[in-house]
Image 1 (tube, rainbow, N blue to C red):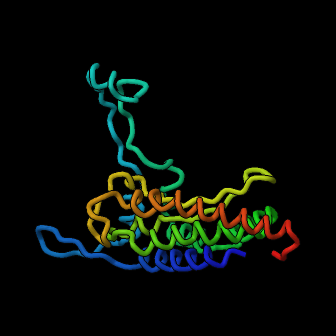
Image 2: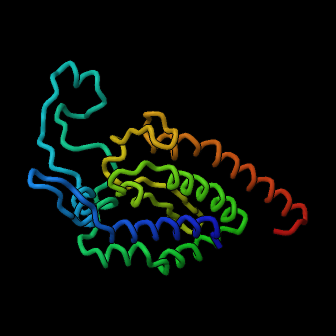
Length: 215
């Protein structure tokens, strides 16, 4: 039902599994040592503790903060980006497509016209972001996701996420991103035009169907 999205999921899941099972190498004063990439991911997926600090009055007045205390980093909710420390559980949850397929079967009830256009639009954004995402620890790339949801029987929602808590702090010159934030260049910037094009495609197909054409 969502062939383009399936391509992204297969590529992303394979990368997640391969990278999580690989070994990295670090260096200490006594020489080189090997560490588990998975253990590093688990640690990096959790936002570090940040003590409360208070802004001066003028800075607070000119900011959008509700209080003069800064308590947390910007980013996605902790529940979205925190990895289960049990590697087998986390990877199996990532790889298991049965629950996702059930959701897509329900989502398909909104109509093949909407499903097809959403699949084409969002999968293109997700796959392009995944291909060009900068790599250092590989965690933020592994946590890119393409998701569909049906909050009600008449609403179908699709979204592309960068789930690493430190996404807002990443800047790179890799892959032609030019020192900018990859989530803006690869996800935010192309979304408006791509979704607009999908909406136009939906409208044209509905008009054609209403005129007696086939889906």
